[in-house]
Image (cartoon, rainbow, N blue to C red; front, side, top):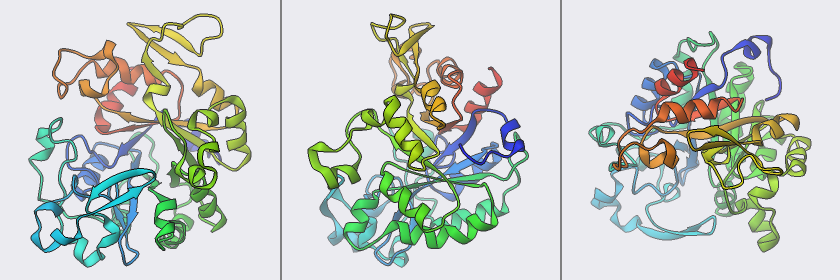
Length: 359
């Protein structure tokens, strides 16, 4: 990342970011999840930002909310169920842009992965949907992160910016208006990330003081580039070549954030061979050269998401056959951290801290 202060440079690495709060223990994006993440010592909090019909920025994993709220059980909103195409994917459900904030605030959150996290699902129906401004208030009240002594940072993920712009809800304008005063007063606390580079540039052009991180999937192409160039759009993989990384840095991007499988995975067949991007770690795992290449280009590196359940671990780290059971997460988490990256997103921040302590 850019603009390192000496204090941040000396802080433990990698930074532990609470992914949607402590979302392994409480329904994601709820006040309970955020407060628990702060209690567990999170050094940064990551919300996903979508928007209501009346322009209120709300915190949900997606704008389609049937899996994360009780909207499907609310007869007064039954007529709002519809089908939309979002970034090339056809979805049926209920969408934040069809609700005012007054309406959305009556809904209650639900665990998004109840089959995996039954303990969290016990809290279904207890907590309301939050706005971005509600999380800013929590961060303003929060004590410094114990591991760094620094104020807890905000990693704001902008969701589906091209889609929202197409329906007259420009997220760059709305987010800049909400975050610009906070970021100006809280120097160095804001990171903004998105799967679309266009909106990152728009936010920077609006004077939002932040580090800018580009999110990259394992496959496919960014929605903003597909909308502009169609089949000729540069793929995510194309951004991860040496030339692609250099272009990102030259364009003002400060870091990248990638799926864990792009950093550590079950060892491919060519692991350790001449010309392979993968080096053996032992235990059936291998690490890629991406962190080193990105750092050489001047980019910070984050990864998402550290999760302990077998369902989310590479095969060599699974224990037993129950997807919801915890596998050998410690081996996987420490392998990720030993790549030398700058930050990890974790659903259970305490487990990430345990892994970091084991390095």
